[in-house]
Length: 333
Image (cartoon, rainbow, N blue to C red; front, top):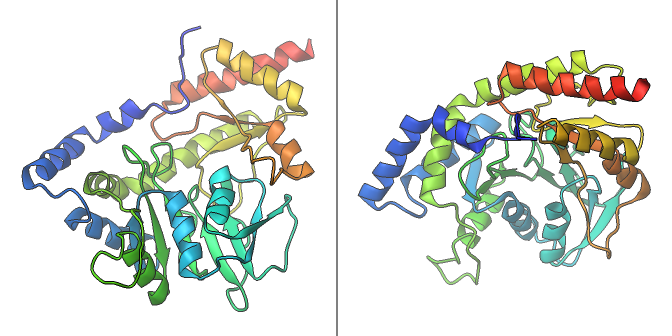
């Protein structure tokens, strides 16, 4: 069946901000400001103010933000605890930084002094006190939820599917620590201006920053619309599927429903597909060297992400709800 509801419609984002996006593109081409220029600095100021930190460094991706946070804290060769229910980039950054991942199951704690806390799908996870710990927050799915943080560093993604998505790859690191800020700012650009060492290319290009400067001015209305959609799902799907926690302060990067088992999840996925609704399986696979623990593996096998972006219409969301209700009505007969 022809798609009636996309999981995300990127063209709508462009149409929504077309005038401002086109103006930014023309200005950058006409001025030749391409890499680490005024728009990048402007976005760093806007992001730090929004999150509530002293510093922000614009980077090439959220993955790079985690990698550079680890390097800035000088954790190479050490163990770092992280949750298993996260995208593989979190674990990959730990490995690529020369560290040893300690993969925790859902609700499993750890006394490891180095920790990455992940706010998955926009729901806040507990953050240990930084006293006695090195704490990095993977907030790539939680812009708007993490405010005035006390951890050593917070990592952000602006991949197109994120709450604040751009038109390519981009990310950032925020922090209140001057030493972390200065390290990441120089390392991202090869230590180009001094001989301190060899860094890497982890820069955000000026075009992405310019587009993000347009969009971040609308972040509150973006979050409000996603919340409105989520609350409609919470009301209309109650009793049919397992629903996410509507905890205070969370944002809605994704709306994740849970079926009774993997078979039902697969049936629902294909039913929605045949009805013209695009959904996404909620499984984040790790490599065999670091397998998912059992509770996380089961949870991911039973869950599905359904459309929940600010650009979906009420009519589309009502159609998704109708399809899910039809699926369970058919199964009950």
